[in-house]
Each structure stands twice: as C-alpha cells, then as structure tokens.
Image (cartoon, rainbow, N blue to C red; front, side, top):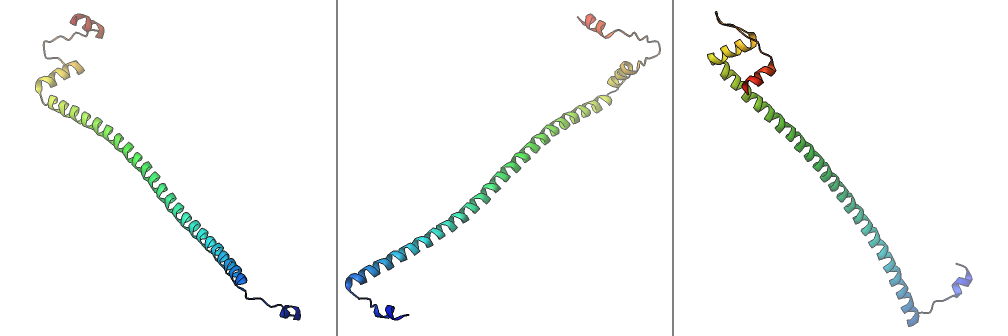
Length: 132
C-alpha cells in the first residue's frame, strides 16, 4: 500500500454497514443462484440420460417382441401345414392297408387287370359327360 491509500479511512456508519451487508447478501444470492442452476443442469442431464436409456430399451424391446410375434405366426402356419400333411399321410397309410382300396389304386394308376378283364381308357372330358 502506498501512502495515499493509508490515508483513506472507511467510516463505520450505520448506513455504510447497511449498504455493505446488502451487497454481501446480493453477492451471496447470486452465488446461490449459480449453484442452484448448476445443480438443476446436472440433475436435468442425469434425468435426460436415464430417460433416453429407458426409452431406447423400451423401443428395442418392442422391436424384439414384434419379431418374436412374427416368428410365432410363421411357426403356427408351418405347424398347421405340417399337421394337415400328417393327417393326410395317416389317412393314406390307413387306406393303403385296406386291400380293396389298394387293388383299385393299382388298377387305376398302373392299368393292372385281373385275368379276363379288359381295360378301356376314356378321355378325361368324356368321364364328366358320362357322369352328368
């Protein structure tokens, strides 16, 4: 400090004390506002990050669920087809165990005949006309 600054003396009047305490209060309020803003920003960022993570997980789960549902539908259709085919094959096996059906099938498909029988081949369209 130089000599001119030593000569200045602060008066401790009630008005000066009041003004100085008000400025300290204002400075403290500003500091508290800055701290509160920083806290609010930090909490907001944490909340935003958590919300984004959870939203991402929900969307990913929905897509996975949709894929599983689609696969399930495809599997159900395939199961239905296989079940129908299985029933048809069981019916064919049952019919093939029947001697009358087996003889009829062999005669129609392979033109097999018993001794003394004559086989006549008719066009496919003529069979429809005869049935009418």
